[in-house]
Length: 113
Length: 119
Image (tube, rainbow over all chains, first blue to last red; front, side, top):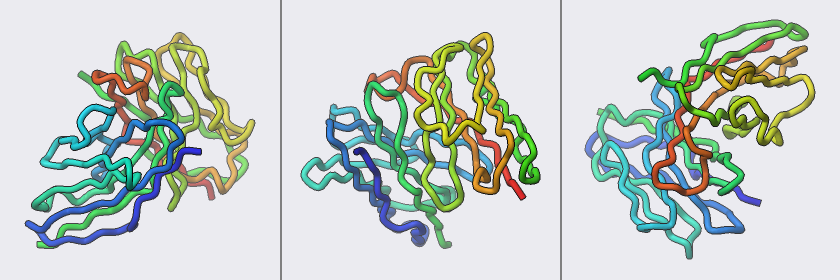
């Protein structure tokens, strides 16, 4: 069965520091993988997605993620954190043609001045 | 262009009462999804409409939950009677194309959710 594990429910970084949010997946078929972000009082917004093209995926707001099949990982990174990056981030895997997403538990990112 | 709209944004009800949540998808989006996040847990899929038809309702927790999408426009999710464990955030999402196929142009748009508290 497909599943997603996000390591760390809370991550805190200083402004300007590297952001690394971890995501590991389990899937019996080649997966489609996604990162979503939820800012306070807003809906989930797509950051980026992997759909079997390039393994390094660039998203909005300077975020990127690398699909590593050997490690079953899809970690999200950003070289330099901004205060505006403070939000909750969700990794998700698609069940393909079934048309729904399986989400991880989410990671809350705090950015310290 | 208006996004996915959900209301109410918050609802506080007592156990045993009925609550109806509404979702207005983006105009022209045939695919509508409901998801739920119980506190501390993952966001979980509830069901998927294609126009007015239920395509997949495998995530609906029990028969106290009833989803409808009359006319293929807005959707409602009714909980009757509500139980304490129903508390959480209910998200609605819509897409023009069936989501999850990996098509480059597919995109799922989420509403900001309804926070349901059952006391």
